[in-house]
Length: 196
Picture 1 (tube, rainbow, N blue to C red):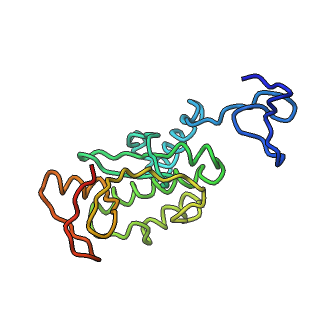
Picture 2: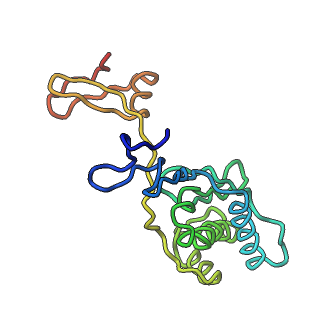
Picture 3: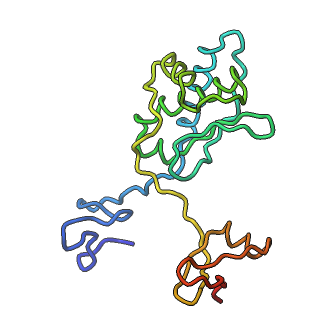
């Protein structure tokens, strides 16, 4: 779309629409939604550096690093089929690189190191063991972040009773359809039925 005098890119209130043109007529860049290969490499290098600092005698024991985390979490350590994974939310790093690098990276590596030390025993996720690793990495042992990330969109299914409409989660819908669960309205006591 080109900018013309009859179709200005700014609204009447003086704001500018994103993804079009700035006030000088230059095309605005579309916001990125993925990290560059250089940014991903920098995160992977930091993961390796933290593991080398923690276990210098075993430098090649880093888990798989993925950038496929969605939702409001900036990072996640998880164990799948006996293999560790570190997952990072690219949007968190794109919105506020300085707030998440290296703190979010250290946060997830610390979870991994607690698991490697204590296994799956009863250790609090952000307890003293985790905090000591964060301090060893010279990072603030912060549990949450303040970057405003959009959560996942949740699919709902419409069910009705005698008095109102209910939006049921995909899980509850599955339980009704496949497992023959029954849900009743707390107000009228009638069984919920899917709206066609």
